[in-house]
Amino acid sequence: TLTDTNGCDSTLVNPILISIPEAGFFAGPQNDDCPPFDASFIDSSSSDIISWQWNFGDGDIITKNSPDTTFHLYKSSGYFDVGVIATNALGCKDTLEIDSFIRVPGPAGTFTFSVDSNRCFTEANFSAITQDVSSISWDFRDGVTGTDSVVSHRYETNGFYNPILILKDSNNCQISIESTDTIFVSTATISNLIIPDTNKSFPENSILFTGSSSSPAPVVSWEWNFGDGDSITTTSSSPQKHRYISTGDYKVVLKITDSDGCTSVFDTLISIIEGVITSNVFTPNGDGINDVFTILRNGKKEHYIVIFNRWGEKIYENTAPEIQWAGKNFSGEAVPNGTYYFVLKSTGENGEVTENHNFITIIR
Image (cartoon, rainbow, N blue to C red; front, side, top):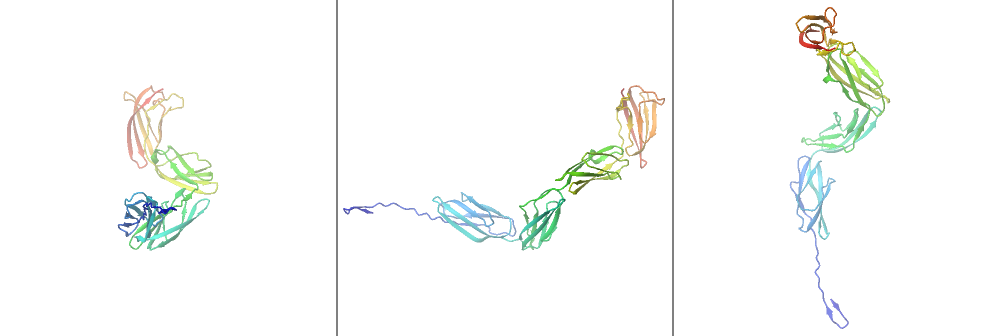
């Protein structure tokens, strides 16, 4: 109300809006027997609210712009204080926080580790702090596990590892805690040892062995052990050829050593089997290429072969551990170009005889 010097007055009335937001929520249910627990929160705030900031009590905070049911996964056990800050369109806020609103029983714990990096391996020392626990186990993520609250583990394979602590309580509730810190291991290692023909071959055939490796330091030695008494050591990664005389299973071992003295060993099994391999054409023209029809021993004790011409006449016969026919008849004369029929009987080391019938073509 305003009054002038003459005593006249005037009154103006404007309404003032006072908005008091009210935060509210409930959950259903509020507890579970074991983590993980997927909790649901239902908003019961006043209708003027346009923004909700949820604090779930486990370090996670989110902001939403709708009153829809809010879900949150509790991955560990404990009592969690839950709160919400409700904001209306005028920017007014109200906060509601309920102590120990979510209750998830079960084992709890944390762990730390320190890493001792040797030139040739990495050793990690683990220590766990636990609560309500009946058993402790570790997954070191390299295929090895452990027990006890304090434990050491040696990593010998290159890679990145995030170890896991596994806790269980008396009610058989189990939780897994994965480290967010990564253990990096880098030492000399053999990543592969390659043998052709699916790790099977015949005796007296040359087999090419190829190994691949990695190392933070230069590899200075490659030691090959072929499992039959023969071995070789080289200073390069060049593939190695080897020939087995007898049938059987052989363990091939490759050991590398780098300039720091770190070593890595890889082995694989190769089977040398009996068999007969024959070609179907050869060219005895004296050029030194494919001049002889050859049947290797291939684990057999001996071979017996008979060769016939197109008229059924026997032109060649021989018994030997290895057959080599230069395309000549009994008189030592070169036979004409054409296709010839042969019968091959092969006797194994155990006395078993196998028979093979086939054709061979001569082209000069």
